[in-house]
Amino acid sequence: MQWNDLNKFPWSIPLGSVLRIPIRLHVTFFILWIAQTLGSIYYGTWYVILSLIVMGPLLLTTILVHELGHCLAARYIGGTAESILLWPLGGLACIGYNTTYLRAIWVAAAGPLTHIPMVAIWVALLFPAYHASTGSWHITLHQPPVDQSHFGHALVVWAIVVAVFIFFSTFQLFMAIRHDKLSEHPLFASVSAGGTGPAAGVGGGAPAPTAHANAPGWTYPGFQASKSGTAAGFGAPGYPGPSNGASVAGRQPGSVYYVGNAV
Image (tube, rainbow, N blue to C red):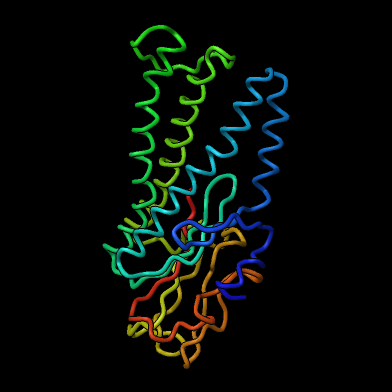
């Protein structure tokens, strides 16, 4: 299955595209969304509405902006952004670029950096929402009651919580990059092709990093390149491989494909 065969991406549905990047949504999102909504019925109508918004469009928008940060950073350095898969606790940004240590840091950091303007916007909205809820401009950080008179305040607070949670969940990625352990991270895998190192793999390419033994099935534990420069295998069965007809020919030394997860 090729990158351009996204309609077969397992257990996902298309959501269109943003900036020419196909977006798909994993069906497990609906399981969490429905479960959260049913669990909130006990607390009343306004809590149900809050759950529908927070665990629905608000969560997906936050994750999408995060993943677009990775994609646009890869494009900025001449790479490609093939697709984004959204799921309840994060997102998968399938990108490729000619890597260096600094470029890897730049692409990895671009996702979390998008949370700075997102949080800034929500904090700016917190002031009028707090004033409407309490009649005061002296902001205190607390979760207000979820009812009609405090709904806007509660929504903004939860928006900040979601943005901050996803931001700090990427700290493990920075540690993996810092200690050169990105390929062993259970939620990330990078694949090198066309390298020239002495430990070159099939076709003269640098050996593909091996993902952590406990990596989930949707990560890419590795791939092999044939002498003609086409991919012979790329990750878990049923998941897509490189773009352009599975060809990796013409990639510069150190070309990397990886899947980034927001959480």
